[in-house]
Length: 356
Image (cartoon, rainbow, N blue to C red; front, side, top):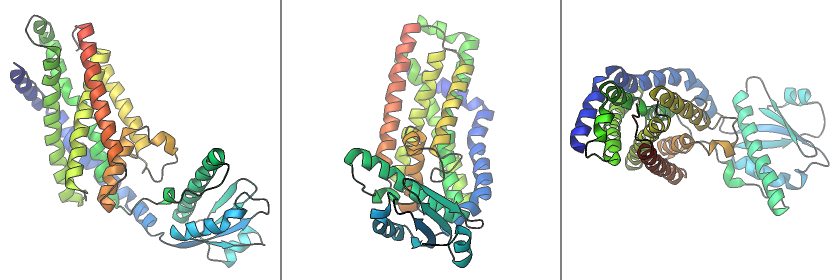
C-alpha cells in the first residue's frame, strides 16, 4: 500500500511544473545576479592581505599592559599597528599611509574608517570586535585578560559565485516543502484523508508517503541545479562525500520540517507562510543575504540558525577543504528531522482530521 501511495504522490508532485521550475531555475537566477553584484566586494576583501593602521593609546587604557600581545596578534592577522603619540588624527592620516586609525581610551576604542579603504576598515573593525568580545568574557570569567587568538582567524578567500552558488542551493532546499502542496491540495479536493481513516494504513505510512517523494524530487531538482551552476558559474564545491551527506540530511530535515508545520497548523497557506518566515529569518542570520563574515549580527545569535552552520560548513569546505562546523550542522539536521518527524506523527494521531 505504501509503495502505491509513494508512487501516486510522486506523480502528483511531478505534475506541478511551476514548482519544479521554481526550484530549478530560481536558484540559478539568484546566484547569477548576486554573484555579479557582489563579485567586486568579495574580491576587494581578498585584496586586504597586509596593511598598516595607526593607533593612539591612553595612559589609563585597559589595553596598555597587553599592547605588545595585541601587536603580535595583529601581525598574524596581516594588520601592522603603528603607535602615534601626538598630532590630530587628520594630520597623522595625511602624513602616513594608514588604512585605518584606532584610539584606545580607558575602556573602549574608536575606529576611524578612511574613505577609499573601507574594506581595510571593516577588517580592522572585525579584528577589534573579536578582541573586545574575548576581553570582556575573559575578564568576567577569570579576572584576567587572555586574548582569544584562535577566534581571530578570518574567512578564507572565496569567490562570489562560489559563496552564493552554495548558500542559495541551501536556501532553496529549505523551501522544498512547497512540493508537498500538490499532494495536500489533491487530498483535500478528493477527500482522500477521510477514505484513509477506514483503510488499514498507519499514520507512519501516510507520513512517509508524502515525505519520501518530496525528498526524492528535491534531490533530483538540486542535482540539476547544482550541475547547471557548476557549468555556468564554475561553482566549486568541497569534499564531495561530506557535501553530499550534508545536502542529503538537509533535504530530509527540510521535508520533515515542512510536513510538521502542515500537520501542526492544519492549513496549507499558514504552514507555507510560517515555513517561509522561518527560512527567511534563518537565512538572514545564516548568511544567505548578507555574507556571514560581514554580518553585524552577534555570533551568539548566528549560531542559533541551522543555516549558519550549514552555510559555513559548505563554504569552508569549498574554500579550504575543511570546516569546524561539519559536526554541528549534521547534529542540527538530525535533531530537526527527528523532532519534526515524531511531533508530526503525534499531532496527526491526536487530531485525526483532514490535514489539508
